[in-house]
Length: 111
Image (tube, rainbow, N blue to C red; front, side, top):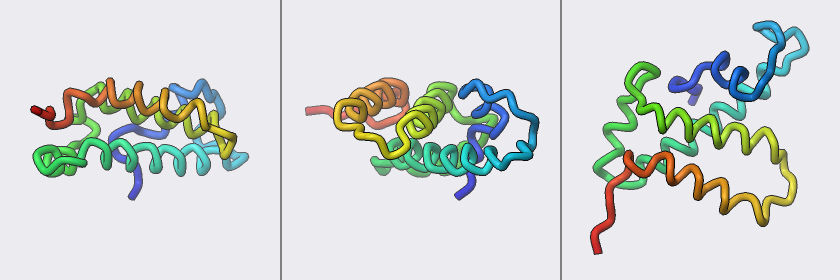
């Protein structure tokens, strides 16, 4: 699945990458791969409940909530920064930040 909710240009801007587009060194392919992974991870997290699954599937770059875009960019930055490093103490904090960003786009749990 290719990322459709955040563009490569937005991702590169968020990461502070200022290379020409397309990057002649091939760095864009790596950023695009991680962007695809980040978007898939966030959409999976938003679609974990039956209520949001059809809504998340219908989002486009023009209709996706801005906080969901922010969550995608947050996960993208995390994937770029931690390329297989020991993430024992980092990952829970990253997911906590992401969950706060997408909280309004998930079903509330009522106990």
